Length: 81
Length: 229
Image (tube, rainbow over all chains, first blue to last red; front, side, top):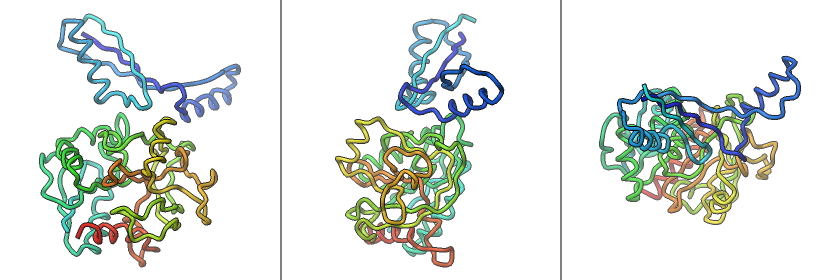
């Protein structure tokens, strides 16, 4: 199975990189941007074929390593290979 | 007193801190590779500065899961003093030994310069040689030193006396303009609940010899020797 994982900053956590992207887009003439939040996207190829087991596995990976849950949220989708 | 310095791939202050420790303790510290499984019996474990694992994923995240860290965490929980400097502080937060997280500097710039710090407590094993409320000079050299924890955690840290150092101006006031990286409440370093684990972004080992421009950092190692010898 394939897991597509999105890691985003929790609301309330300042995102200076998002701010810098917002400024840069403004400099390129893209007006009307009301906010930018940046994050990470990770794809995993899993040997597991059972969706429930895969879900539990990916959740554990996110909690233990892929996200820092002090400042980040994670979400993911599973896709059959 | 015996100290151990953990060496990760891309640690780069491991030898500096070993020299600073040896000058004060008189004994060469053990240099312990991250892939080892046991830290030799030590009175102090040091996680040095650097860019372990290239700062991949998040600073300190990979190092926090190195084989040696299982033993570091176990020994820390059993009471062995642990000092994490810069990347070592990041590793301590990622390993769950200290609360909060070090985020990208608010300016987005790597900052390398001396800063003034207010010593918040002098009744600890790390700071007993400093004057109360004193202002010291340590260098910083980091891209991700912006300390963040939620409001409840910050209140708890303050209430329990866990703030170790704050960025301040030369008069000792933790002013906004003295905050180099956007850290919440100007926090530069924190203690664990029991006070035997310290993580800080500034580098005491880089100003531990008058010939290098100052020795405020040396007092931290002297404090440890007087507490742990």
